[in-house]
Length: 112
Length: 116
Image (tube, rainbow over all chains, first blue to last red; front, side):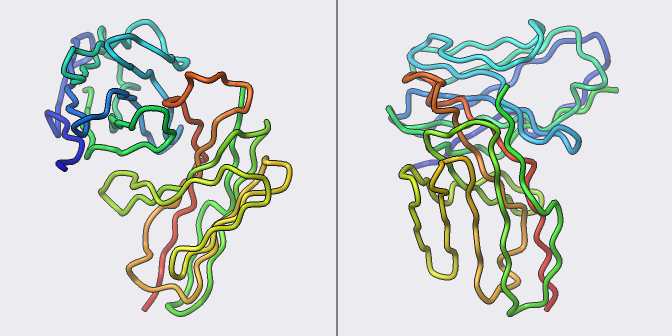
């Protein structure tokens, strides 16, 4: 099976702009989670989607949002970008009723 | 909220030496997982422990889950240069609810350097 794919891999944006990141899970996985990874804060959970519904949410401001499509592909959006949003954004998919997370390669977002 | 602490933050070893990283949660966990992230890469799932006192082995790697389900350890015997990377533990609060599969709290990770 193909692994989790994320696009784009790298992105440079300016403060105040918005960005959309995309994630395609492993075939058959309906759960997609998003994490933010920074050197200072480590890996932090953003949200999880299952069958097009947000099932869990982390402690991030409302500028961070996401959605999932009927084919389980997911997007996350960050509006009004701040310098502190510079990070590696990781998407992970999971089999039903499983805690195991299979991560994609990530999108490296730089906000200038 | 739930916190997961990992020590040490850094570990330098000579090839052939053993390595251990420890993980402690502020709350009781329903399960704990371990991931490895190579430099420039993404976290890769290694193993999941669910039962109190559980011990699992994968070749040179030994994973333990504490009796109280609040701590865990990863031990690597006779490290090799291929073991280089950051090792993360990740857990879920036992009170998180039955639909919290995707919501994991990660430790800060232990960065392992192996000198040949």
